[in-house]
Image (cartoon, rainbow, N blue to C red; front, top):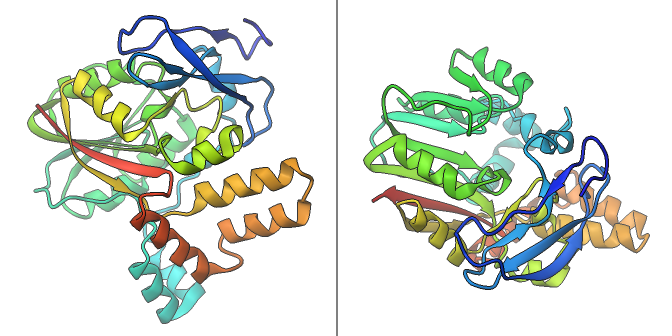
Length: 316
């Protein structure tokens, strides 16, 4: 299928090696940047893994990551002082109690860390300050150069084209990365090869098993079509990890309300409710109802209903 020179699509079967028997779930579009195309989401009848199919090819997918793509505009490390000035000591205390940070760091002894999709290096800087030897992999040259400017070893390129490291890593992390990859099973096998027995893997992603996905369907913010090529539930994520030799040890739901708020905003926009969707955007960006947003974040995380999760897995 060919929409334009930039948006060539391809059909691919389930990466778990299942028979080609899929159920069509919905068809969505790029709501984040408004780029052209319609993209079906299907579910494998054998293993239940959901994926975008057909999807942009490896060459075409770059078209859907423009220069202003949000995750490449990483917030610099050390912004606590600016938050303190903005909201005062009481506001900072509340923010710490109702923490929306998804990158839960286990009590591991510092070692060698690789971040897949490191953007401009804020998490690398955080972990380096805790004694870790850090390296990164990033597809965006602009973001990678910003991370390099901090003094870190950053490889620019795709996971598929990256050679094996000289030394194994003790921890590999990917914050909202796995769902973007054309072959997550291949990627997990590669992470396995790059680590040693007892090493850890941390991956965060949307939770397509959340109730909000069933409610909002193609308006669900966590879909992020067509950049998200796979849509994991806790069960399918566990199975994909096991396929590549990883054992899920812990699953954490984020204290973050953005999936819900943004999905509501998409619904309002579709109905022409411009004032309502603008108000919700202000809430997402912290300009309105800041403390209410923090309490909502904590509530959704506690109920495992935020639609965002992080898995910690060990190498078998």
